[in-house]
Every structure is written in structure tokens, then in C-alpha cells.
Image (cartoon, rainbow, N blue to C red; front, side, top):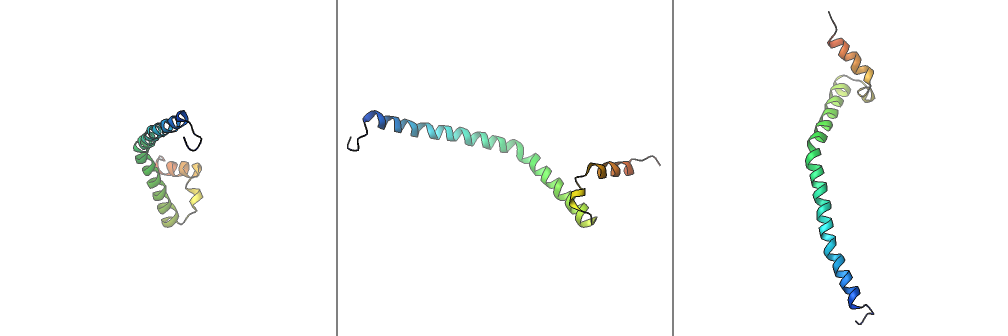
Length: 84
């Protein structure tokens, strides 16, 4: 060849090009499968956090970091289900 590349090196380069799309398709398929199974739970968690933020921060006029406090939720549970 004119550039000093032998025929076997050209063959190796073309083989690498053929393998790359197959690996790329496998990677894309794995990512799409992962997103297919996780987008609904992820969207649900985001909706829950947005609802908590709206209800507790804007309506309740409290700090957002208290939404994630376990003791606050335990207290709310005790208030709701307390024997009267």
C-alpha cells in the first residue's frame, strides 16, 4: 500500500469497524431495557417528592428538610392512628 500499511492491517481495521456497531447496539439495548423497567418507579418517586414538597413546604409552611425526617412521619402516624 502507498501509506506503508499492509493488507493485514487494513483487514484488522475493517474488522474493528464491523464489531463496534454490534457492541453499540447491545449497549443501547441494555440501556433501553433498563429505562423501560425503571421509568415508572422513578416517575412515581419524583411525583411523591414533588407532592410532599408542595403539601408540606408551600401549604404547611414548613422546611423541606423536615419532610425527610423519620421522626416527623412517626409523629404524624401516631396522630392519625392514636386510640381516642
